[in-house]
Length: 279
Ligand code: PDD
Image 1: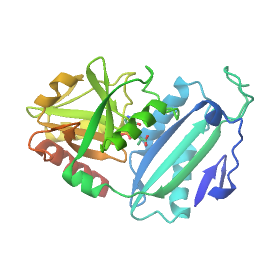
Image 2: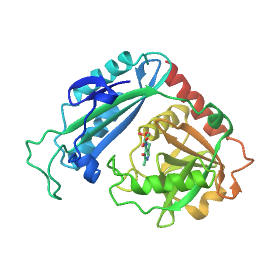
Image 3: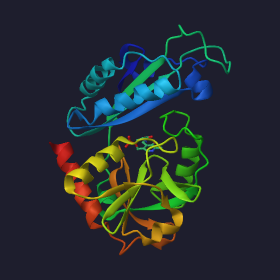
Protein backbone atom coordinates (compact mmCIF):
# COMPACT_ATOMS: atom_id res chain seq x y z
CA UNK A 1 0.00 0.00 0.00
CA UNK A 2 1.37 3.38 -1.03
CA UNK A 3 0.54 6.22 1.36
CA UNK A 4 1.31 9.92 1.52
CA UNK A 5 3.36 11.18 4.46
CA UNK A 6 4.75 14.69 4.82
CA UNK A 7 5.12 15.60 1.13
CA UNK A 8 6.13 12.13 -0.07
CA UNK A 9 4.50 9.00 -1.41
CA UNK A 10 5.95 5.84 0.14
CA UNK A 11 5.10 2.26 1.13
CA UNK A 12 3.08 2.30 4.36
CA UNK A 13 5.78 0.25 6.15
CA UNK A 14 8.28 3.06 5.58
CA UNK A 15 6.30 5.71 7.47
CA UNK A 16 8.06 6.81 10.65
CA UNK A 17 5.96 8.86 13.05
CA UNK A 18 7.66 10.43 16.05
CA UNK A 19 6.45 9.41 19.52
CA UNK A 20 6.42 13.17 20.18
CA UNK A 21 3.82 13.73 17.47
CA UNK A 22 0.98 15.76 19.02
CA UNK A 23 -1.47 13.46 17.26
CA UNK A 24 -0.01 10.46 19.10
CA UNK A 25 0.38 12.17 22.48
CA UNK A 26 -2.78 14.30 22.62
CA UNK A 27 -4.99 13.37 19.67
CA UNK A 28 -4.17 16.93 18.59
CA UNK A 29 -5.21 16.76 14.96
CA UNK A 30 -8.04 16.66 12.46
CA UNK A 31 -9.12 14.21 9.78
CA UNK A 32 -11.47 13.59 6.87
CA UNK A 33 -12.88 10.46 5.27
CA UNK A 34 -13.90 10.78 1.62
CA UNK A 35 -15.55 8.19 -0.65
CA UNK A 36 -14.36 7.51 -4.17
CA UNK A 37 -16.78 5.98 -6.66
CA UNK A 38 -15.05 4.61 -9.77
CA UNK A 39 -12.11 6.90 -9.10
CA UNK A 40 -14.27 9.99 -8.58
CA UNK A 41 -13.87 11.61 -5.17
CA UNK A 42 -17.31 12.51 -3.88
CA UNK A 43 -17.70 16.13 -2.68
CA UNK A 44 -13.96 16.56 -2.18
CA UNK A 45 -14.27 20.37 -2.09
CA UNK A 46 -16.78 20.16 0.78
CA UNK A 47 -14.48 17.83 2.75
CA UNK A 48 -11.51 20.16 2.22
CA UNK A 49 -13.58 23.19 3.22
CA UNK A 50 -14.59 21.40 6.43
CA UNK A 51 -11.00 20.36 7.07
CA UNK A 52 -9.81 23.95 6.66
CA UNK A 53 -12.45 25.00 9.18
CA UNK A 54 -11.46 22.27 11.68
CA UNK A 55 -7.81 23.39 11.38
CA UNK A 56 -8.79 27.03 11.86
CA UNK A 57 -10.92 26.28 14.93
CA UNK A 58 -8.04 24.33 16.52
CA UNK A 59 -5.50 26.96 15.41
CA UNK A 60 -3.40 24.33 13.62
CA UNK A 61 -1.33 25.78 10.78
CA UNK A 62 -2.10 23.17 8.17
CA UNK A 63 -0.54 22.73 4.75
CA UNK A 64 -2.01 24.18 1.57
CA UNK A 65 -5.15 22.05 1.26
CA UNK A 66 -5.41 22.69 -2.48
CA UNK A 67 -2.68 20.09 -2.99
CA UNK A 68 -4.67 17.40 -1.14
CA UNK A 69 -6.99 16.77 -4.07
CA UNK A 70 -4.02 15.95 -6.33
CA UNK A 71 -2.52 13.82 -3.55
CA UNK A 72 -5.82 11.93 -3.28
CA UNK A 73 -6.01 11.26 -7.03
CA UNK A 74 -2.40 10.10 -7.02
CA UNK A 75 -3.10 7.75 -4.08
CA UNK A 76 -6.02 6.22 -5.96
CA UNK A 77 -3.80 5.79 -9.02
CA UNK A 78 -0.81 4.32 -7.22
CA UNK A 79 -2.99 1.86 -5.28
CA UNK A 80 -4.98 0.83 -8.37
CA UNK A 81 -8.23 2.13 -6.92
CA UNK A 82 -9.41 4.12 -9.93
CA UNK A 83 -12.21 1.60 -10.40
CA UNK A 84 -14.71 0.30 -7.90
CA UNK A 85 -15.26 1.48 -4.35
CA UNK A 86 -12.55 3.18 -2.33
CA UNK A 87 -12.11 5.54 0.57
CA UNK A 88 -9.59 8.19 1.30
CA UNK A 89 -8.35 9.07 4.79
CA UNK A 90 -6.51 12.34 5.46
CA UNK A 91 -5.11 13.33 8.84
CA UNK A 92 -3.24 16.47 9.86
CA UNK A 93 -1.75 16.91 13.34
CA UNK A 94 -0.09 19.87 15.04
CA UNK A 95 3.30 18.21 14.42
CA UNK A 96 6.18 17.03 16.56
CA UNK A 97 7.15 18.80 19.79
CA UNK A 98 8.10 17.90 23.38
CA UNK A 99 5.00 17.14 25.43
CA UNK A 100 3.50 20.37 26.71
CA UNK A 101 -0.14 21.43 26.83
CA UNK A 102 0.40 24.80 25.16
CA UNK A 103 1.03 24.96 21.42
CA UNK A 104 4.55 24.39 20.07
CA UNK A 105 6.58 27.01 18.20
CA UNK A 106 4.41 28.26 15.31
CA UNK A 107 7.14 27.19 12.88
CA UNK A 108 6.54 23.51 13.82
CA UNK A 109 5.40 21.82 10.60
CA UNK A 110 2.14 19.87 10.78
CA UNK A 111 2.23 16.10 10.20
CA UNK A 112 0.24 15.18 7.10
CA UNK A 113 -0.79 11.60 6.39
CA UNK A 114 -3.18 10.25 3.76
CA UNK A 115 -4.22 6.82 2.53
CA UNK A 116 -6.54 5.35 -0.07
CA UNK A 117 -7.95 1.89 0.49
CA UNK A 118 -10.62 -0.38 -0.97
CA UNK A 119 -14.10 0.05 0.49
CA UNK A 120 -16.60 -2.74 1.04
CA UNK A 121 -20.09 -1.30 0.40
CA UNK A 122 -22.92 -2.07 2.87
CA UNK A 123 -25.27 -3.49 0.23
CA UNK A 124 -27.14 -5.78 2.59
CA UNK A 125 -27.57 -3.15 5.31
CA UNK A 126 -28.72 -0.52 2.78
CA UNK A 127 -31.30 -2.98 1.52
CA UNK A 128 -32.64 -4.33 4.82
CA UNK A 129 -31.91 -1.53 7.26
CA UNK A 130 -30.01 -1.67 10.55
CA UNK A 131 -30.42 -1.49 14.30
CA UNK A 132 -29.22 1.48 16.32
CA UNK A 133 -28.74 1.80 20.06
CA UNK A 134 -29.20 5.01 22.05
CA UNK A 135 -26.57 6.31 24.45
CA UNK A 136 -25.94 9.43 26.49
CA UNK A 137 -23.89 11.99 24.52
CA UNK A 138 -20.86 12.31 26.77
CA UNK A 139 -18.80 14.20 24.18
CA UNK A 140 -17.44 17.72 24.47
CA UNK A 141 -19.29 20.77 23.17
CA UNK A 142 -17.24 21.17 19.95
CA UNK A 143 -18.50 18.18 18.00
CA UNK A 144 -18.49 20.46 14.92
CA UNK A 145 -14.70 20.02 14.74
CA UNK A 146 -13.61 16.81 13.03
CA UNK A 147 -10.88 16.03 15.56
CA UNK A 148 -9.01 12.71 15.63
CA UNK A 149 -9.61 12.52 19.40
CA UNK A 150 -12.67 10.25 19.27
CA UNK A 151 -12.73 8.40 22.60
CA UNK A 152 -16.45 8.86 23.41
CA UNK A 153 -17.30 7.85 19.83
CA UNK A 154 -15.10 4.76 20.10
CA UNK A 155 -16.62 3.71 23.43
CA UNK A 156 -20.11 4.19 22.03
CA UNK A 157 -19.32 2.37 18.81
CA UNK A 158 -17.87 -0.60 20.67
CA UNK A 159 -20.91 -0.74 22.94
CA UNK A 160 -23.15 -0.67 19.86
CA UNK A 161 -21.25 -3.60 18.39
CA UNK A 162 -21.65 -5.53 21.65
CA UNK A 163 -25.40 -4.83 21.53
CA UNK A 164 -25.60 -6.09 17.94
CA UNK A 165 -26.27 -2.61 16.58
CA UNK A 166 -24.79 -0.93 13.52
CA UNK A 167 -24.50 2.46 15.18
CA UNK A 168 -24.63 4.18 18.56
CA UNK A 169 -26.82 7.27 18.45
CA UNK A 170 -26.28 9.96 21.05
CA UNK A 171 -28.91 11.65 23.23
CA UNK A 172 -28.11 15.06 24.75
CA UNK A 173 -30.63 16.88 26.95
CA UNK A 174 -33.35 14.47 25.81
CA UNK A 175 -32.73 15.08 22.09
CA UNK A 176 -31.07 12.88 19.47
CA UNK A 177 -27.93 14.65 18.25
CA UNK A 178 -26.08 12.29 15.89
CA UNK A 179 -24.38 8.91 15.71
CA UNK A 180 -20.83 7.93 16.66
CA UNK A 181 -19.87 8.31 13.00
CA UNK A 182 -23.10 9.38 11.31
CA UNK A 183 -25.79 12.06 11.38
CA UNK A 184 -29.35 11.15 12.23
CA UNK A 185 -32.71 11.97 10.59
CA UNK A 186 -36.30 11.04 11.28
CA UNK A 187 -39.37 11.30 9.06
CA UNK A 188 -42.70 12.39 10.55
CA UNK A 189 -45.67 12.58 8.18
CA UNK A 190 -43.43 13.01 5.13
CA UNK A 191 -41.24 15.71 6.73
CA UNK A 192 -37.56 14.98 7.35
CA UNK A 193 -36.29 16.26 10.69
CA UNK A 194 -32.62 16.48 11.69
CA UNK A 195 -30.63 18.19 14.44
CA UNK A 196 -29.66 21.77 13.48
CA UNK A 197 -26.08 22.51 12.45
CA UNK A 198 -24.33 23.68 15.60
CA UNK A 199 -21.44 22.80 17.93
CA UNK A 200 -23.22 19.64 19.18
CA UNK A 201 -22.97 17.81 15.82
CA UNK A 202 -20.59 17.42 12.94
CA UNK A 203 -21.91 19.18 9.85
CA UNK A 204 -21.91 15.97 7.81
CA UNK A 205 -21.31 16.17 4.08
CA UNK A 206 -23.91 13.40 3.58
CA UNK A 207 -26.31 15.36 5.81
CA UNK A 208 -25.87 18.32 3.46
CA UNK A 209 -26.35 16.09 0.40
CA UNK A 210 -29.53 14.62 1.93
CA UNK A 211 -30.91 18.13 2.54
CA UNK A 212 -30.11 19.07 -1.08
CA UNK A 213 -31.80 15.91 -2.36
CA UNK A 214 -34.87 16.67 -0.20
CA UNK A 215 -35.09 20.13 -1.82
CA UNK A 216 -34.87 18.55 -5.29
CA UNK A 217 -37.39 15.82 -4.51
CA UNK A 218 -39.85 18.17 -2.78
CA UNK A 219 -39.43 16.50 0.62
CA UNK A 220 -40.01 19.10 3.35
CA UNK A 221 -37.19 19.49 5.89
CA UNK A 222 -37.09 20.82 9.44
CA UNK A 223 -33.72 21.33 11.12
CA UNK A 224 -34.68 20.90 14.73
CA UNK A 225 -33.98 18.39 17.51
CA UNK A 226 -35.96 15.14 17.62
CA UNK A 227 -36.66 14.23 21.23
CA UNK A 228 -35.99 10.70 22.38
CA UNK A 229 -39.62 10.54 23.52
CA UNK A 230 -40.83 11.36 19.97
CA UNK A 231 -38.84 8.64 18.27
CA UNK A 232 -41.56 6.01 18.38
CA UNK A 233 -43.89 8.35 16.49
CA UNK A 234 -41.47 8.55 13.56
CA UNK A 235 -42.45 6.83 10.32
CA UNK A 236 -38.85 6.36 9.26
CA UNK A 237 -35.39 6.77 10.75
CA UNK A 238 -32.01 6.87 9.06
CA UNK A 239 -28.39 7.59 9.74
CA UNK A 240 -26.21 9.24 7.09
CA UNK A 241 -22.49 9.47 6.52
CA UNK A 242 -19.71 9.26 3.97
CA UNK A 243 -19.38 5.51 4.34
CA UNK A 244 -22.91 4.76 5.59
CA UNK A 245 -24.53 6.86 2.80
CA UNK A 246 -28.31 6.80 3.45
CA UNK A 247 -28.66 3.97 5.96
CA UNK A 248 -32.22 2.92 6.89
CA UNK A 249 -32.78 2.33 10.62
CA UNK A 250 -35.40 -0.36 11.27
CA UNK A 251 -34.76 -1.09 14.93
CA UNK A 252 -33.92 1.03 17.98
CA UNK A 253 -32.67 -1.04 20.92
CA UNK A 254 -35.58 -3.38 21.67
CA UNK A 255 -38.30 -1.93 19.40
CA UNK A 256 -39.03 -1.89 15.68
CA UNK A 257 -39.49 1.21 13.51
CA UNK A 258 -42.81 1.11 11.60
CA UNK A 259 -43.24 -2.25 9.87
CA UNK A 260 -39.52 -3.02 10.22
CA UNK A 261 -38.76 -2.19 6.59
CA UNK A 262 -37.03 0.89 5.12
CA UNK A 263 -39.70 3.50 4.30
CA UNK A 264 -40.52 5.38 1.08
CA UNK A 265 -38.63 8.61 1.91
CA UNK A 266 -35.50 6.62 2.75
CA UNK A 267 -35.81 4.67 -0.49
CA UNK A 268 -36.29 7.84 -2.55
CA UNK A 269 -33.17 9.36 -0.99
CA UNK A 270 -31.16 6.20 -1.55
CA UNK A 271 -32.16 6.12 -5.23
CA UNK A 272 -31.41 9.80 -5.74
CA UNK A 273 -28.05 9.41 -4.02
CA UNK A 274 -27.16 6.41 -6.20
CA UNK A 275 -27.85 8.54 -9.28
CA UNK A 276 -25.52 11.23 -7.95
CA UNK A 277 -22.63 8.84 -7.42
CA UNK A 278 -23.16 7.13 -10.76
CA UNK A 279 -23.37 10.43 -12.64
N1 PDD B 1 -17.50 10.00 10.25
N2 PDD B 1 -20.97 12.66 12.79
C1 PDD B 1 -19.79 12.15 13.19
C2 PDD B 1 -19.47 12.19 14.63
C3 PDD B 1 -18.90 11.60 12.26
O1 PDD B 1 -17.72 11.10 12.66
C4 PDD B 1 -19.27 11.57 10.88
C5 PDD B 1 -18.35 11.01 9.83
C6 PDD B 1 -20.52 12.09 10.51
C7 PDD B 1 -20.98 12.11 9.09
O2 PDD B 1 -20.24 13.05 8.35
P1 PDD B 1 -19.99 12.86 6.79
O3 PDD B 1 -21.33 12.77 6.15
O4 PDD B 1 -19.28 14.11 6.39
O5 PDD B 1 -19.20 11.63 6.64
C8 PDD B 1 -21.33 12.64 11.49
C9 PDD B 1 -16.46 9.50 9.38
C10 PDD B 1 -16.97 8.88 8.14
C11 PDD B 1 -15.55 8.58 10.19
O6 PDD B 1 -15.25 8.95 11.32
O7 PDD B 1 -15.14 7.53 9.71
